[in-house]
Image (cartoon, rainbow, N blue to C red; front, side):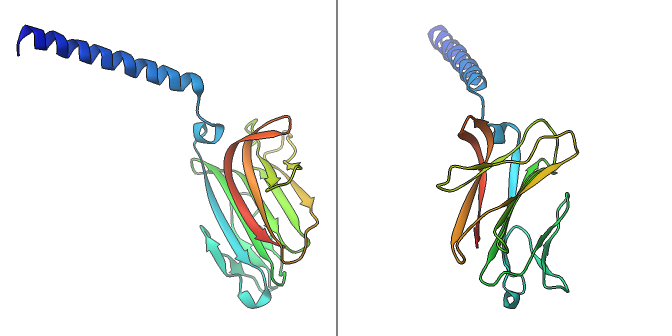
Length: 185
């Protein structure tokens, strides 16, 4: 390799290393979204809750029909029990950090209830908003191991509802999208 080629090669290597350093510094200063930075993943399941559907489920988990007709999905908090609701579709979104359940959101078509859980008490919580809606649903933040709140919603029978889950709230603006779930009242 000639002296000129060697200098040119060293210049390219140094320029590349310098550019890479600035790129990494730039990413660090911009930061990733909270969901990505926290390494959160989700598992979503939708369950048919009509008595004749035998708890048919779609997604990451399989629901089981209990003797009383309730559809059951297990989890690391308090499990989930969906009551029979003719024509209804229940939905559950679980949020994990690594292998630890840090939150969950459940749409129960029987009575149109939305349950929102913070299962980690890690000074972070989740925020839920109906697609196209303005109200923000969130669990209380206490010193307990995990918190939850049951929101009694009003919804038209047979209507489909989508709920979006976020990691951050600034006033009424939500950001840090985690995932969504869809149910039928």
